[in-house]
Length: 250
Image 1 (cartoon, rainbow, N blue to C red):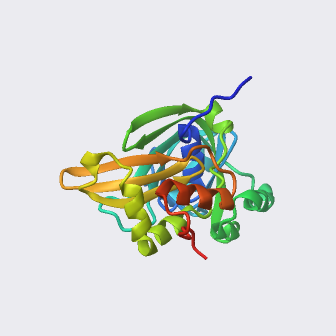
Image 2 (cartoon, one colour):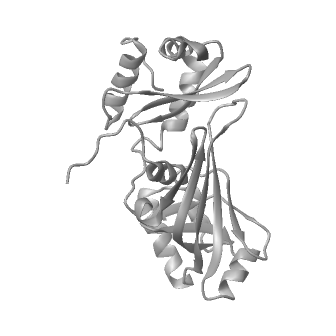
Image 3 (tube, rainbow, N blue to C red):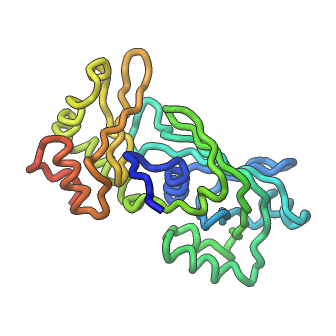
């Protein structure tokens, strides 16, 4: 079967990528206060989450054979924007405890592809829970979309998820000249606003235009998807029309 060529990540890919760099997430279980989370790992149609061992959510899930729950993830830009939120994500499903005897081994397995210092807390005040996903919803500046558990199971995170925040912060702080070059390619009615880098992926770069009448998000796409840092650096410089500017941090 031929795979369709696109110029942007799928909604499922956006969700999987956002979960790799969670900074603000909440677990909602009926009858308990929302639980703040710092680790969310998607694997196929499941989400493994790190929660306080003595928290209400942990107590509730041990009292039930599967518990309806919702996970809300706020994906924020790494720079100080007027509105930092890039997307809101809701994962719905059934919550189960992870057997205590399996937690450490599972944490090590998760860390091999999703390294996070929070996983070191397993067994030290935090425990793993498993959310069997039923569906997901993502809301961005361009609207909202539903995503099935099957679509999430087939999606992979963007290959630059570990570095995106540093690159966006570097571009915003040190390369106003390059951002200005990008801005020349935006629709003319948006060029009067303040142009700030918002996101970066294998398909292109996104900008937030902070105008007098509100904010707008715009994507500039690469001629083709990139696969490594060298290709990404070349694509950025080519898109900006600045072949000799080093766009990435040292």
